[in-house]
Image: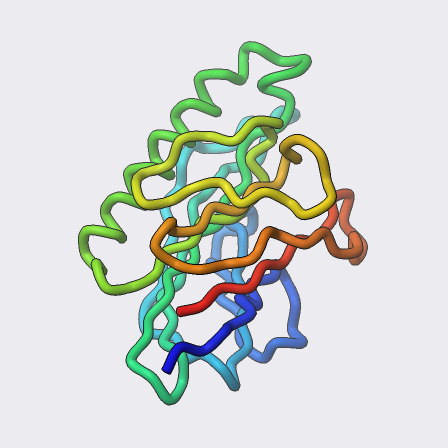
Length: 183
């Protein structure tokens, strides 16, 4: 039986009951609904050190979850790339490219080491275009929103899922986004 699951991945939200918050202050935390998922593994990788007045250190954070009552596993990867690289600060391009190489490498490694887990990538990419990701990941469009926003969601092509839905900002300078997936 297939179950439709709302991937409840939200940064810094205690309402879901469980949060992976890496010790590094600038790493992007991941929250999930603890009554729906059990944490199996997690980690983070620093993509580059910070620079005063430019950017904090940046990270790729991930968590492997098991859907309770099933043997279905999900890996969620999140990140926040350096801002301004594609608008006012071309000197930041190399950090952005380094970050993307690290992200893609981590996604490939997670997919290789956990081939039966459904892998999703979300985050603030600070780029208004869909980006190539390791197969089978593909950009998920936002329903009713033209173009590509700074925040991206990538889902596996072999998993049925909805378009992303734009949600309130909840205190952020960015909207939140949700999607539903059949695991």
